[in-house]
Length: 134
Image (cartoon, rainbow, N blue to C red; front, side, top):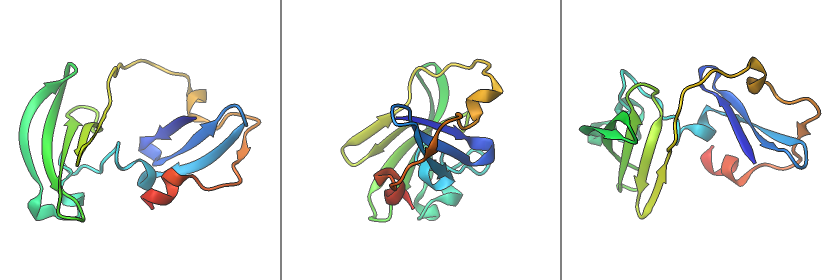
């Protein structure tokens, strides 16, 4: 599976190359990786904005990041490191699970990278990923 997401348009696809199928995805499906930031802060967009706070600015994998403490819907702490330049989550720590993005590099890509490949048809199912994030 390959995920292509165009942040500026808040749309994208989950592609299944072997079957030539795709699922449409939107902002809700990628909000874990691209948290909505207001002036660089995820706090105004969290479930408990008053309990959200910036903890420290530090380097992660050679990128400048800000570590945040958020409280989820169950009242549990969630730690998020956001990239100060790209506005994406570099790392999430939720309970005993850690998600981390690494190997980020900037390059130019062809506009065709942001188009649905020809010959793909909509998948006849809904993804578990999609149903859990709506």
